[in-house]
Image (cartoon, rainbow, N blue to C red; front, side, top):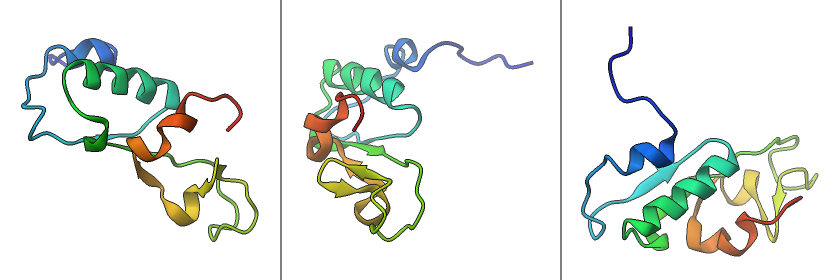
Length: 97
């Protein structure tokens, strides 16, 4: 019964209108979806300093001791889970991080 827009996020982004100097984006979901959404948003003029991503990963101890949620030099459970994209940009596309 849904009558609203349907499609992948990256295609739906093109339908949205926003002022890139005023907008802030908060992303959550599979990392591959966030990666393509970030590309789409930056192509639309949004700076990486205005994009935040929730990097929730499997966590065990929740205090940064076990290392299960380590994302490069940061621990998602202790330092996040929401990170400004420019802080994790170099790690974001790497496999096995």
